View 1: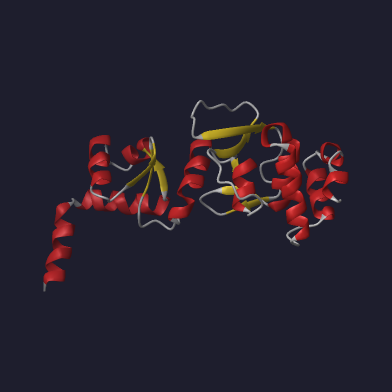
View 2: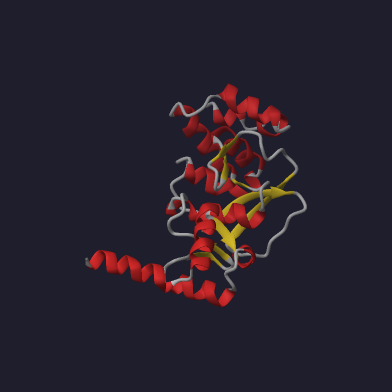
Length: 207
């Protein structure tokens, strides 16, 4: 009896319009203030829903429905890809850590973006590139991340930012653990037009 009364109270606490809007936002997963507005939830109401736990604020201006299909551990990566758009990909140090090729937790989220894209947001470290954002990518729906091979290739490519020792050690680890091979790394490097870039590191990697 108490349970049915509780459920009834939840239903009557919000209008049917709000409940329908929340259901649509749940289906979208990650959303912005503007998207919430389009669904009929204005900023003051969004703020109340957040304080009531009906909505989770991930970053400034970026939210997620707590009952969406997105795993909480993926919130940060999902928010980053939402923030930078559909061509953005998690890469660099963040991808190295994700794939278990380094142990130190990154202080920022590293994101591969198109060459002309910039951001002053201190939460992110951008790697601007003209390479195809669809090559050697793992698509998890809510976020995209470079696979092991591309992660290694771009770590070597951006060794001045990531650190050549870190990049070389990551490549050695991936190969020694059977996570990838020199042939697979070379193939992805060729696809990205970075074959010459990584060849200078081969001797150090295959010691």
